[in-house]
Length: 253
Image (tube, rainbow, N blue to C red; front, side, top):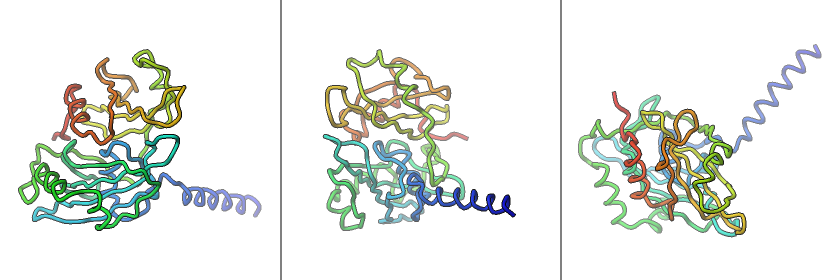
């Protein structure tokens, strides 16, 4: 009886620990949420993230908004990230989108954004919405050759660690303190986009953003596969970085 009691105690403990996993997304639309946390640079998988659907076109695309905590900030203050995105389609296993064209994001000096359609309109103009829709073929047939896919999950796993980044410390002009390392999408060639947020040892606040492209062995694919960007919302710089390093923007056959 003692062994049985002990067994159930272990099971209950595991269940309780899972319930308090802050990196597990529990809200609705996990198929849309995964697109945001795999593509919006600066976002992280978190239970407090929010997703709201704004519009849907004639081909089933969804225009939606995302908000969540971002580690980016100055003087150790918390910030949030808000984005508008378009999903091309989803199925029982994958979500599909046009890589590097699917979102517009902004970083906000606030710990949390109570996401609503009205709140979204406070941050994004009608021009932003039209630009996003145009780039994503809104109300036109879906271009299968442009589809990038990510597996639907409520919890992302990033196995890139600080030691993997420190191997390339000679590439930096100053000594850095790494405060956040996060993985984003992995392409058809198994290249993973990695975000590193840092500050110099002599400063407070985290305001240096680096992007890496690592292969499956956690190695930098070339000396060009590392870039410092001034803003995590600079979609064009991120796109060009991927393009110059042979990123595959579609999932293939």
